[in-house]
Length: 123
Image 1 (cartoon, rainbow, N blue to C red):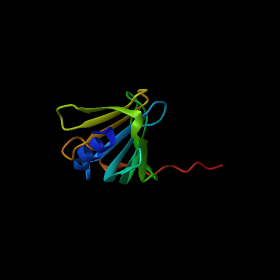
Image 2 (image 1 turned 135 degrees about the vertical axis):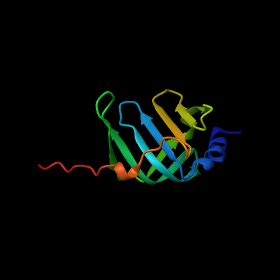
Image 3 (image 1 turned 90 degrees about the vertical axis):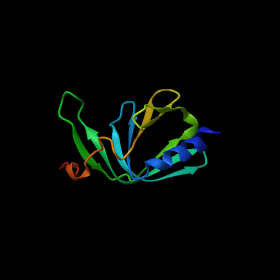
């Protein structure tokens, strides 16, 4: 079975939960999963809402509303599906630069009521 078919079949149970995406050199994103769709070699995650993490521990962490309602990952780049015995599933790219973590509803999820709106920078 291809990783795409296995991913979609296994990940549908996370709809309504959250996913976290981390790409090397970029901020971590967290989204509330609305749907997961396979499109060709891509896995598309549509989010009801999403946020970007600003700050790196030990500095204070701030979550800021993100206007991007979906994420697209090229599935043939991913080499690993991993259950960690806590109900979470992790996909990692072959080069190790992208990780997507799927979180079930009963884990520590981001409280979107505490997510801030981005601050506008005046010129």
